[in-house]
Image (cartoon, rainbow, N blue to C red; front, side, top):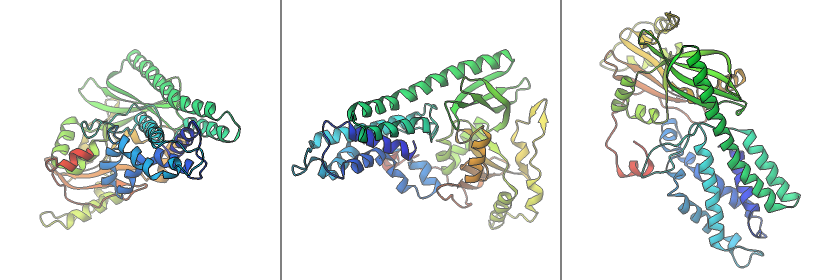
Length: 405
């Protein structure tokens, strides 16, 4: 979740203490405990490390007690005998553990999720009910924390803030389920054949949602569609089409490219979109430096060859649209990290040129092997440059511990 929500978590639990130690360091240490799991960002200086480490071992329920204990030891002013109204070390540890636990729980309600069972399971729990920045969650928590601090009834208001932090995600989970049921009924009534449906929160959820589903067509073709929804699950506007990356290709990429394996680990329904002309030129320039390949033709011609023609009423579902001179140029991404609202797309376009901050740029040969690849991350971390693919290596102990492949 966003930093405001985490600050609110720390402030609320600080107010829940049976008595508040008379020291300036009480609130800062509680906030430190609430944001501690996200310290993995300090080791995520580029896109590949972000994908591999963020919400990994630092978000595990098995490391949470240790993290809470280390911070409790650092928070000596709260339990030291010289501090007026001090509390015990055990109490500080339990409250810090509660801060971390609520942090992990809320992260599990987001679309990115968290690997909370590492190192014993690398399954990412994501309930797709909270947007990454949700003012309807954070603002009431902050208001209740401020009222508890300055308006009396401290523990009552702090308890109300914690109850809201638990009740609001459950409310959104119920709306998600109701919207999924309503969307399935509408698609069935309209004669659509859908093999998979996912409801995601959008900007300003729970008032806006997104439905992402795979539609199967009579000719055996399938495509990914995105539909904007109201808070009550009613469609808003026309559904968009996207080229779904075939599962056979996904499996092949995971087996032959270490970066693709890491990237696909955080995706659910990967899509293929054409590269911008400048990216195609950059890719072909990189290809020209490879000793066993020679590309002398203009990249501009290839960039315009990516078509969006329709086939029997729907966009072509084949990735042949991305082929130029026996090479396939495309961007691998996931609709989890996007928006179907105009204002949401505008915000994302200002952050990243494609409206999707995290993506893999790939050039494949005629056998679908990765020739060169680049993981792009427009904000806040830098991406990687163009390079040859490296096959995944056998998992080491550190890979097992951190949950990396």
